[in-house]
Image (tube, rainbow, N blue to C red; front, side, top):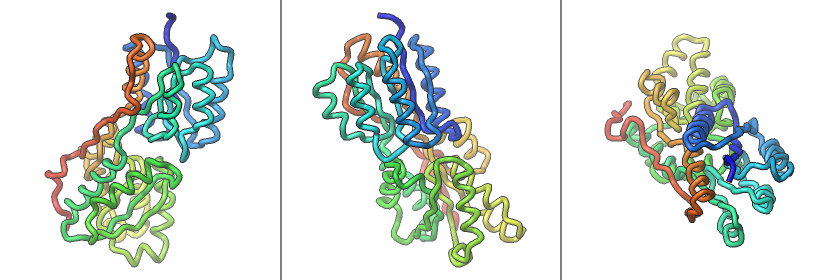
Length: 301
């Protein structure tokens, strides 16, 4: 068997967690002697589908042995998956519960599986962080990822499970990047709604959007208003060591949630399946943790 070739398809190169996913893949590939190609879909599901189909439809000798991808849109591209598997390409889905995996595994000769953080549990941890910081209740400004993205929906569901009923939520939408959060927060701050709600926490579904929201507050022209808003704690998620965890240490964020990158784990599993003929589980999970631990969070009011 020649050197294995894998393709890694990620959502965007403007998000610290996605860049950490790329770094994890690069390190695992170097360790295991695998050639990898990394593509970014610019947060567009059609672009991602087109990129993958282009790779699947090349001559057989130029195809990758497996594709590892983190879906942009609401589905995990079942038709693209089918074509890849028919072409003899292994298929690993990241951070998504793809219903078709069980069906395709019944008849396929190539490895098919998913690796994910438990996104509902990630949301539960965020709710527990809010409860620790606001034991007497209050209000949060919640920056969500795109509505069609299952990660965003599951994180919201988990938050709602553990958030006390006396903590009220005002929601805005982002696209996982700093700028996609800065714009709607800036617009919200200029609206009459923002002046009617006393926000006690800003909670974002990832660290990049938490920092984007913070930048919107930093741009407030009125010094008194700006100082008031900048005293509000900011919570993020993903906890990449060089960004999210660093921002907690520096005080830019009060807390984050570490969700370990899983591209490296997927590469290790694929190599084990292809080279060692190992049977893989249908789905493997990473474990998320609060940074700092929830027990160490002190009430903000």
